[in-house]
Amino acid sequence: MKVAILSGSVYGTAEEVARHAADILNAAGFEAWHNARASLADVQAFAPDAFLAVTSTTGMGELPDNLQPLYSNLRDQLPAAWRGLPGAVIGLGDASYGDTFCGGGEQMRELFAELGVREVLPMLRLDASESVTPETDAEPWLAELVTALRG
Image 1: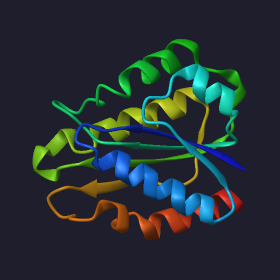
Image 2: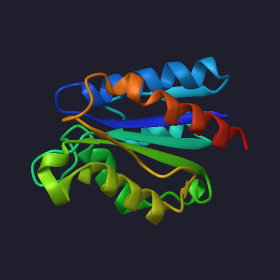
Image 3: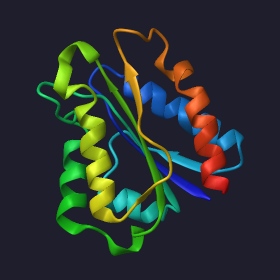
Image 4: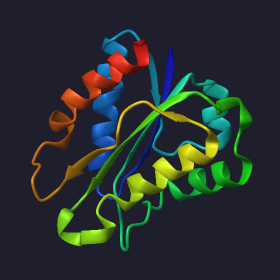
């Protein structure tokens, strides 16, 4: 199964989590693909069977700049080929921001719903005020994702 990992990061933490997720998925026998600057054409050329979005949150709960162009293109085009494919989201944020905590992740969940991507696990919320090693903290959830994708 080919898993496209879409990521948005400001300081590199979400990208690090995405790379770690790719390593775990590859080790589990999946073909994970991650490109932090991916265009819609890049994702379509990979022809994914599943999706994982890993994104931090900026400002007032927005997506990072590097994910905005892909997000906008996906919203504009809503590729029908992805309807029904499995997907999941890892959101990074800081709970001290209140209502906007993991807002970028919530935007990706909403986009996946619009695309018809089937959420196979509840979004993992990684809190910067509690986590020193988010990539390691994501491992139990990623193990569940591996199981969900195999199921």
